[in-house]
Length: 471
Image (cartoon, rainbow, N blue to C red; front, side, top):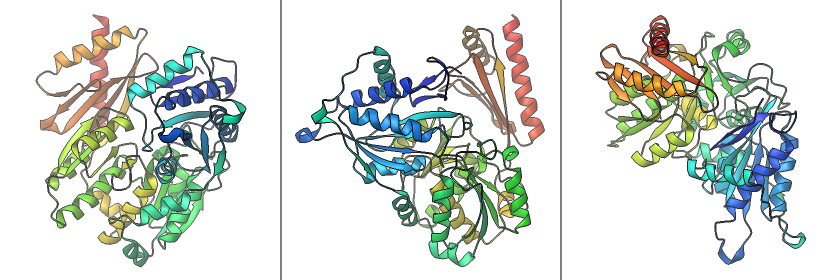
């Protein structure tokens, strides 16, 4: 597998020859480039730079961590090592420790043979496209300048898990007394990673009975780690057998969150953000807050827009990618935002996807509602998303297809910020076509009020694309 380089970092499979997968040479090279660009920022009084490093529990994590930390101190940078820590914990740790940046060692929802470096700025947020590109170019330059023996950095270890939980429990919208009074019983599937450390601690503090499934952070993922319904069959069955109120699933680095209803049916990860927004917007309206705004990306469910409009809030759609969502949220002053993959971004906490925040807010909502999860889901707008792709022999065809789609659907509501999204307003349907960053593929997302119609819409658009290719 070829190494994948993007503005947010690098990722690949572990093992193999240089140029295939993520090798120790790649890890050192890109860690150095991160430091080199960091050192372009002037420090007051010549103080040393400080970088937070944390990792999920995947098998290669310890090896990658040692290479990253070793490179950082070789560059004269001090390291705050979080050890096993979720992505949102690492993001907050940058702020808590007043660090100059952070490197998170995680391949998120990718299988266990993958790993990656995710790069943060001094605010604990992902780098901009320009900053990321600068690091990629530096890494490929082949020029390295390490510190002398007298200038090497140092490593200090600090577990920020409880500080993360403390910050969540202090959020005004997290109703700890209401959750404790509800006496919830949940089953947690932490996919053998760091969610098995932080989520049970959170639930204990909230007075929630937690039955753990795959909570040992061994890195031997019990199933495909992406929190999709087809990967959560064991969790669904255990929720029913245990008579639990809810099933909770997180991905290996705990920035994505999905729920299972008490009857074992998926709540569906698209509705994680929608339900949290429903709760927060309702609170804001009761408190008389005006000018409410929400944000999700162009490939996320229309349900967030519908819920926003229900409360008189304005909805905005960003390009796909967490940094694009958080940037737009900051620009418009959104109360809540995120992505349909189960990623909740709540600015009152920080501008990063955070399943810990998502769990606390969802339980607060459920405690206030006093109804079963399956009953609550029925009160939300009902949509279904289908996902497919158009595989091409030549990447040059991508622009031809996207351009033709804009002409074909010129009479409909179009958004061309990231590929082409067409909203068929009268039918409350949409389709989004966007290019892959790594291969000659157009990803096709379609949504309608039934699964059958969503799939049919996707097929119609793919057939149209094939006719364009044949011309």
